[in-house]
Length: 353
Ligand code: SF4
Ligand code: SF4
Image (cartoon, rainbow, N blue to C red):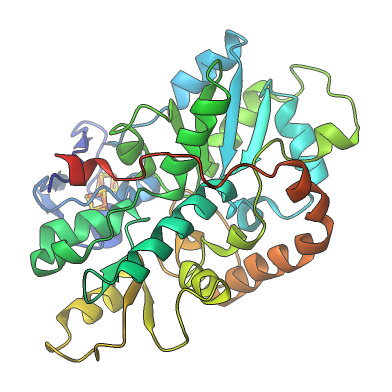
């Protein structure tokens, strides 16, 4: 399997040797030599944490900010796909947020929940087939890279399923071929994943999006009406808990795909290491699923998201958002009842190479 290759480097002129990046790196891929940071590319798993903490912006991590800025300046038709973790960064005043975001010139805006729904169905098929003793989730590109580099014995267990972002990109390309597709989320590593497919044109973190909002907010006048105050096409309210640790397993239990006790959910580098370093046979055969996200608490702990909340509070926030929207979203679900039998090839690029 091929790992996601990343272009990352340190500008020695601007690095002040503060060591913040080294301390943020979860896999010790950074050394400080002569008061300058050096990245060991063989160990780097593209998480982007170092670039976020660097006070002098000395770490050159890929960014699509300029690309999206140009698209907006050129008035291109853009479909913005938003990770549901946005509620942790921006709060849940959806109507106000959508009016604000649309005023920058985004033609359509949707949560990626329909993509999550598509992949839940694929996971259901895998678990029913029962071809392997257990599967490890492949929704998190950093976990994927971590397994490829440091936990090679577990490579075969990685589920052959694309992430919700890619599945959603496929659906958006199919139904909106004229639009540029931008993914907005908490994870800098998504840019690396997106480059392996041709369904996402650019990726932004919430932190980058904040900067973009300052530049483009109010560019167009947006009428305050129901249409502009709600998400556009594609919808599924259950999968709004995907970004928190154990979210995918929880949904599979709700769908009757898994039973309680048949999965282990882990988040954060230490507990993931523990999971894989456990003695052989520690997990009994009835455990069919390792639900693993690299950041603490899951994607809600991603470095591209800013929040003063604790992990537990963020989790509650995401759960509460889903609970609150369950009633109000019933109409939207009827309205955007897309066909789950669309024949997207949800096999990830790493299985094809
Ligand atoms: S955080 Fe930035 S300035 Fe500090 S050591 Fe790392 S690269 Fe250099
Ligand atoms: S991107 Fe992540 S793994 Fe790579 S050097 Fe930076 S902090 Fe370490």
